[in-house]
Image (cartoon, rainbow, N blue to C red; front, side, top):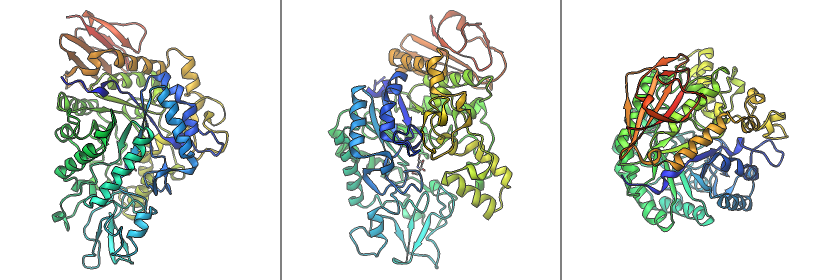
Length: 553
Ligand code: NOJ
C-alpha cells in the first residue's frame, strides 16, 4: 500500500476559549496554549488543530470571522501567535488552523459592502437571490434552524446562509472569492502553520441552481455538487499547497460517503489528505426528520461497528480516514459511546481510545478526552450557551411545539455541543486551574475528581494509557498501514478486528458492555501488547475490557 507521510500524525484538538487562560480574563488564550505545549508533547501528539482564533463577533464562537488575518483580541496578538508557533516548532508539533471559508461573519467588511447595493466590488462575493412571490427563493433551512435565507432591504434580495444568519455564505463561483481564500491560506502558511482543518468544506460547492425552488429540509440535503468541489480542492492544491512541503489537510464533510471521501482524500494528494466523516456521530439521530439530530438515544454497538467498518474498508488503499469520537461539536466520547459512571469511566475511556487508535487513519484527540472528561449533565436551559442548542430549543419547543420542554432538555443534555466546551480541567483547585478569574463558561463540577494533575500523577490513568496508544502508533507499522478486517459483525457486545500488514497481524478486542463476556478469537496464541486490565484472562473479557495482541501465526 502507499505509505502517506502523515500516517504517523496524531492530532490534538484545542478549543482555545476553554483551554487555558493566561491573562486573568476568564477566556483561554494563545499564551495559555503556549504554556501547555509541553503537556501536548508529553501526550505524544505531533499536530495541534486550533479551533478558530481569528477576529470574530463570536455569534458562533469564532466560526463567524470578520478578519481572517487578525487574531481575536481576547486570544492575544499576531506576535503571540508567532511565539506559539515557534514554541510548537521547537517541539516538532505542527499547528493546524481552522479554515472557515464557506461563510464569513455578517460583520466582515466584504459583507458590509456587499449588502449595500448590487453594484460594488463585493456585490458578488455572497449568494444573493431575488425574492420569489415576495418570499425567500426556496424552502431551504439552515443547519442552525430557520430559513437559510435572510432578506436585505437595501438590495431587495435574500442572501444564503447555510448556518446562522450571522454567517453569510461566500460565493465560490466567483473567482475573486477563491483568490481571497488562497491568499488567506498563504498568509498563514508563510507564518509557518503546517495544516488546515477546512470547515464545512462540502458546503462551498453549492448544488446546481436548477434545484432552486425545490423543498429541502436542510440546506445540507441539497449539497454538494461534487465535481465542482473536486475542482475547487484541486485548485487550492495546485495553486497553494503545492508550494509548501507536508501541509496536513482535513476537510470537514458531513455529506461524504466512503466513495466520495476516497476521491477527496485520494492518496495521490491532489485534493485533501483526509476528511471528517459524520456517519458514526450521526447514528442516533431522531427518526422524526423534523427534529433532526436531537435525540437522547444511545448508539447501538452493532451500528457503530457497521459504520466504522464500512469506512475502514471503503478507504483502504484509496483514501485516508480521520478517526475521532468527539470534538467541539459533539458530546464527550465516554458519556456517549460507553459510560461515565465513575465505577467504569476510566476503563471505558481506555477501551474507546483503544478501539479508535488501532484503526487505520489519523486519530484526533479532543482536549480533555485524554483524561476521560465527561458530559456536563446540564439541567436547565439557562446553563446552555451554544447558539445551535438555544436555537433548536426555541424552534422545536416554543415555535413549532414538536417536543416538550423537558424532553428537549434531555436531548440537549445528551447532544449539546456545550458538553465539549466546558473549560479544561487542569487540577482540583479553584476553576480547575483554567483561570483565576470568572470563567467565560461554567466548569464541569467533576473537576475535583477528573483533572490533568491527578491523571499525570497516576500511572494507571487514561492519560498514560493514551500516551502508550500514541507511542504504539508511532512505533508499529501495522497500526499505521495495516488493512482492516472486522470479526463477527453481528456481535452487539464486542468489537473485534484484525489489522494486517504483509504477514504481521494485530487483533483488537473491545467489550462495550458492563458484563463479562467470553470470546475466542485466537487471542490465546497471541502476545498482548496493551490492555486496560493488569492481567489477561484470555477468552474471558471483563466489563469494558480492551486488549490488543500481536498474533503469532
Ligand atoms: C462546523 C464547525 O465545526 C462548527 O462548530 C460550526 O458551528 C459550523 N461548522 C459552522 O462554521
